[in-house]
Length: 408
Ligand SMILES: *Cc1c(COP(=O)(O)O)cnc(C)c1O
Image 1 (spheres, helix red, strand yellow):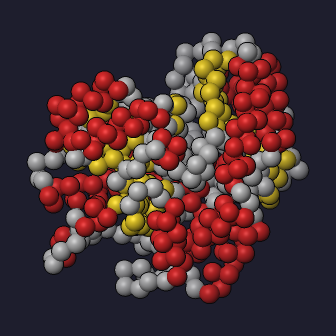
Image 2 (spheres, rainbow, N blue to C red; image 1 turned 45 degrees about the horizontal axis):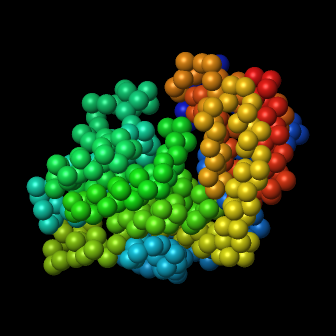
């Protein structure tokens, strides 16, 4: 056996099955089973698997030209995507720097903030993040992620970061006292994903944005999971009326077909890097920066938002949650049921809690036996379906979930 699976103890591991085809929200396995992809294949799939419009964009761009070095050349897919993304962002988020995935989009934002802020004020030396955060698995991104079982072997390698509670008084008092030393604060707007789908009041995000602004610290919105309609608006920040200095994008950016990361920044951030010396530039890049096939795919995905009225679809999914959530919340063992946009989550009572709590896995196993693929976060079970899911399909998912809870 030579294929090493992510987040997996390989000893004794057997995959659920071999995928041979995927259409819409459904996966077909070699043994003939059809499974509903209830977590959008790790939160990436938007318009459905192998959507014809996306497949066509990949084929056409691949036939025209594939990767070319972006340091010295420009090309339409990257330039057009940068222009379209900037046009859809709030405020003056006008400049787009491409990378490979969510983690690199975060690394880029952290490095941009560090270099850009210290170019003007070298006394700023503190990175701020939120308790319960997840920002990726590379060392920089891990540094601003909640220290837990995943970071534990690597803690000595991580940089010092100040972690703040999601409470208005904690945010305000820290920034009042120490804000002048803050480079930036990174946060997942409205929903903290990987640490258990924790929901936060939009007013708290506004408090954080105001505290940052008052202290001259930059707000980095990590929209890698929440972006591209997941919560009903293109960015979650829009739902809170917040306009950050930097935004990290990935996951849904290509509709879920190809890896691509983007860090979008304001003109004020961008101008910190303009100068006569090459040393003042942002000396960062990746081999595949601005990959033309990935960018063309992202353009097709953005077009689909208009053509298929994707955000209206999310509103319909949210309405379906509202209709069926009370019955689910009333089931024994279910606590803290919540939903926003396309995401529904709850905790399963009765276990020790935390990431190794088997209670969530029991519910997900029972759902899998009924054709719904889910992946728990400890005792947190959540549904995060592709945005192409129809209200009837979502109703079926919720019925399956109810049966799975009762069985588990
Ligand atoms: C998934 C995720 C990342 C990391 O993205 P990768 O593509 O897995 O590197 C970063 N931030 C958030 C909020 C995420 O959900």
